[in-house]
Amino acid sequence: MSETPDLPKFQGKRLLGQFLAGLVLLMLGLGVLGRFFREDMVRHASWFVERFGGVGVALGFFVPDLIPVPGAHEAFSAFGLIGGMGFWEVVAWASGGSLLGGSIGFWLGRGLGHTERFQRFLREGRGRYVYGLMQRYGGLALAVAAVSPIPYSIGCWSCGALDYPFGRFLLISLLRIPRVAFYLWLIELGFMAGVG
Image (tube, rainbow, N blue to C red; front, side, top):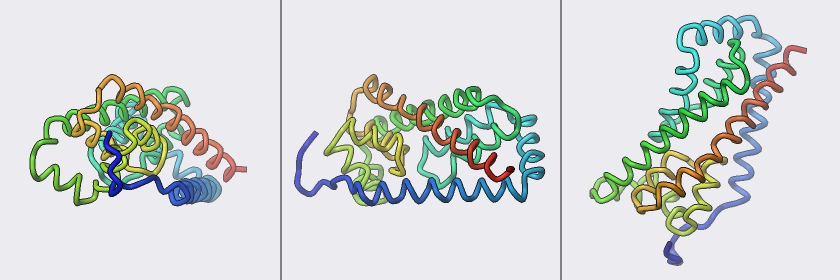
């Protein structure tokens, strides 16, 4: 990976701030929902699980990890858990959807990485920061994207476009599993804290 001075560097304080703000908002939001809307949440979540089951949870992770769309993965895992799925069942479906979406994103990046439009997106558009991190830090940047607010989907595309080895990419992407489990644990804590 090149060490060109114009490539971006990690903005650790900013990332940490975004991460902590997201955690606080998640816990507060779930506490409020658990406290004031518990029955409605359980009813809607149960409907979601009955209708879509684990596939619905997986799709909730697959789509935003394949393409950069704003969305809260955690809403799908929360619905799975609150709707009656087991903790580790939700983790398995969510992680599977995430890994599949990220892997397809990787191969899209590999296939489209040579096109002018895709390169423009990665070098000049929304992907510029993440693509630059992947160029500068390689696997370390992907590891951070897998567990932080850095858009993981763009990291996957970037790795593909940069001809990063797929086996190494997939191994680092396994960090999505503890990320999913950690957030699901917070969801469980936050929602249950609001019930009490």
